[in-house]
Image (cartoon, rainbow, N blue to C red; front, side, top):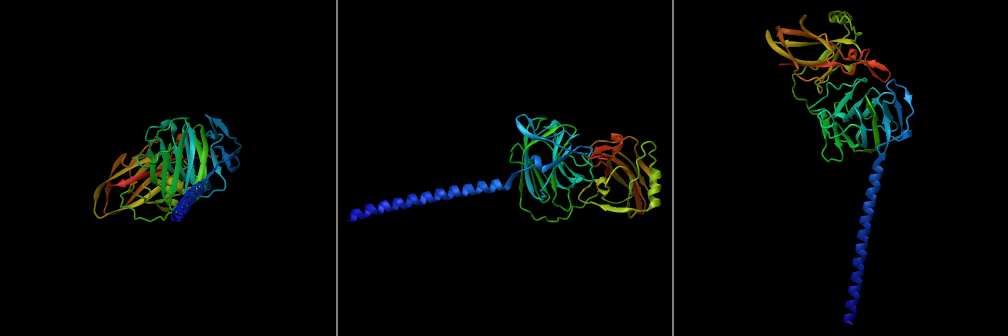
Length: 389
């Protein structure tokens, strides 16, 4: 009898163990399936044919069909007749977007777009793959592609990409942080704070410049929000507080900036600007259609008569005046990256207030009537950087 009970117990225990194992396996499979479903629901394909609108550089809506490029069905933008694609239906703040890109010159993603003129832009230069200019981030203000300001070592960085060859890119935005991943590398190629203040949501767009770009397998995933802590900015010697005039029409023959200064003083309708988180005075952000010349002025207080140095750089043409005396002027258009301290001029400061004036014209004349974007000609870079030492 005892032997029979033992055998029954062994059989019953074995049955229980098998049942428990089966339940564990079932639970694991169910958990994996739920994860897969959650992941599938979190990631969604975007920029399908019915979900976006494409415009030419002349701001004309065009019809675009997917094309086959090197084995992938792709959305093709050519930078001219098909310049920019706006996604419908998604207004996002924190997200992860992944895609395959094959571009020739400049291929990128716009995010937090308020409209076609104002958004954050992250793009690749595939033709400069392997260099520190392969990826660049730019805040777009009023259509101005201010690439000369936002450059290496912070806003431009290296990536191993090639012209018109497929590579994988992932863009992740949380709060003020932007990360860019290339070819499934877990380490970001770019990890920066965006210059949007305050940070808000907006639309997504794709853009190609100066040549064709192909975009394929585009997915979107919403991410959880993060708390943005307002940290005090470090003390800076950069001059970021200015009064600016209205913009006046460019005079590409005379360039008599003193006449413009007299006109600005006569009108006396100055606007105070101050963006301390951006050391560059990017004038395009203050005008819906940046295309002219303006006067910027600021006061420098000095306790005694003293000599200081003004370190500066600029794009286009400028004239610098201190207390009515010309310090610097150029006649040729400067169209290259802007860095702190490229130029230096001495400042002879008087005791008390000293008026520093910068008359600035952007790079529109470099393109003739201006840089063409969404149906209009304008500056694409306009402003300067200035620091006193």
